[in-house]
Image (cartoon, rainbow, N blue to C red; front, side):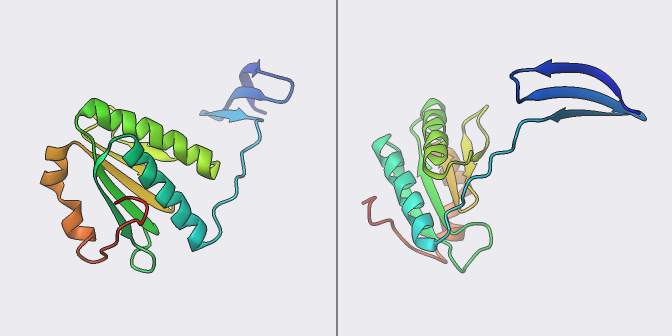
Length: 158
């Protein structure tokens, strides 16, 4: 029989509880998991990717590269590579794009690299966005790896 360590009722429908079962501690929640619809078609995914690329341009990102990976990689259907002028600019771009992803898809994006903001990776599942400080982008040169195989530009970002 599990020993309940504590209960917290944030509302009538959400209960958080901590349990110790034979030395294993778990945190459980009765909150429902959000089920959001994933864009079903490549056209919808492309529209999201182009909207994100346009948002980067609106936020003054530099050297935006839009790469079509559909059928060429299992990582994602599209990749966007862009630069910010400084770590602070890269962090601001990442914050704005993360919010845009949630607004466009109904799902939060996975974000890596925010503490330093030298290179921030935002993964939506269908679109991968790399945001760099210019010198870090030059060092890693992802364009050479990806763009040489699959050159493409977004019609909305040029």
